[in-house]
Image 1 (cartoon, one colour):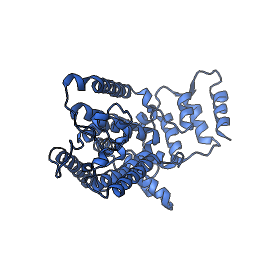
Image 2: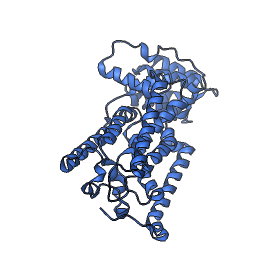
Image 3: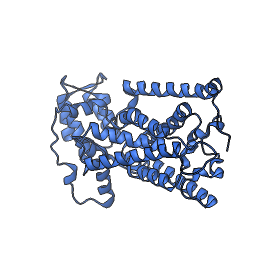
Image 4: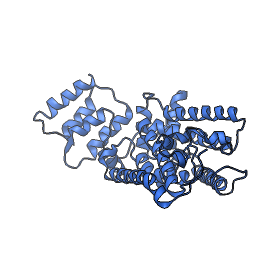
Length: 372
């Protein structure tokens, strides 16, 4: 029996009056004797739906969403409230897995705090669409860096080279009307150390996050951090340029770290405390390095060095927007009031930053450095 036939059977036999609800007794009998092969995770959620219901009815639409590999918040609430204890063995006990499946299981335990979510992701995972966003961004950043490194014959502190700052990718306050620079600066980096740090975090944290939460949500979070970074610099450090993908990287990392902290008991990643401390030390060191280069440049330069405010703005985006995205695994963001509050706040910030860039520089009489 295919899925459409099962849906038709449910509607005709269990809900002939089209009320939108199915009696729990009839639904339980259908689940126990159905002919459609389902993975263990989906069966768990079907029984959770039945056993957690207190009204004696099951919503037909919620059933259809689950059978279509979607989960509404009611399923997660049923599990979270402890109304049903999962009987199956934990995912770590599964044996005979191939290399790819073992990697998927590793990602599940790295990212997700709930055993039900981990099993659901493990059984539902597929490579369509593949997690290519973070990989493509990283490859482009490496190619751009190598091109400028060869051209300038300089692999560290490239921002001290006038030709580097002349790039049409760098955000510079003199060229702020060239809107693409608020995005494209993420492809340029101060030197090998900044590129290596960002690329490593993008691949180690960004790719697993993209595998679990999907390309759309993670690309939205990353680009929100990038845009917030450049706009924040244009407001708080008005004379400084910006280079590097640190705004997006810090959005991903801060969201993941905050999610780990808030779900500390449920996270099963090994050495989580040590890794948390190491991540915070590395991120703090990178911010400290950026502050040092901004206010105490080691070499003579023709203008201000890139600002560090993009790091902080990315972290704020990660803790607010990013944390909500990571906590809403397989749930619709559009149905959550907090999502609309955060989205409204972000759009308000964007509009304020746009007007600031149009009018504030002249009104405040800011003395901008000469264009490179």
